[in-house]
Length: 188
Image (tube, rainbow, N blue to C red; front, side):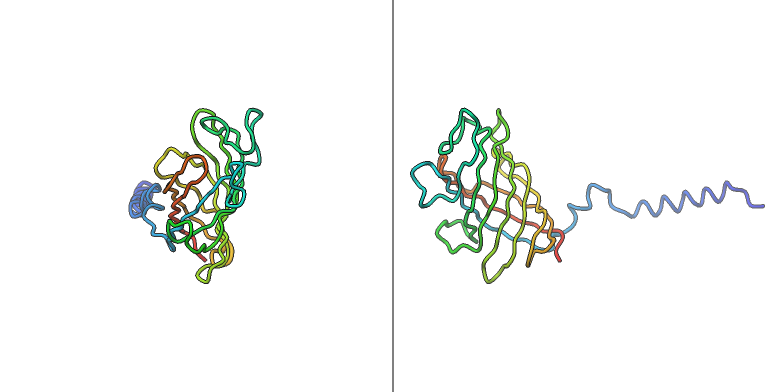
């Protein structure tokens, strides 16, 4: 009869060898290269009571102390803004749009200037058809912020990844431009 001790030792040795060949769990995503990378600019012109013709976003919900034409207080806490903004390939607002950024952002903290975003890039260009969907927290005071790419349609069906947002321009409370660096890790 064979002693169970050498079989157990052999089993542990095989387990150790097979486990040492895999990367640590925290490194797997970072080591992967995106299957697609895209950069767009999205231009937001918020309605301020005087620019209805050019506005691409509007406050549709405000706290009791706020109103629908001026963002509430220093952190804009409680404001809900919907938007239908042009997306361009460069940072020029007057460039030909390749699609629209459509969705909303909610200013969700009293003490810090931050928002929560839910939106889609809806493409209408010869290069891209379909949409990409995004969601996540946007701590606006950070130089760069990551939000999740949670799906898509058309050319981007079932895509998932990360979009890094960077405020590229800010003109008071009326206009801002975001640079959106999209890295897709699931492409179909």
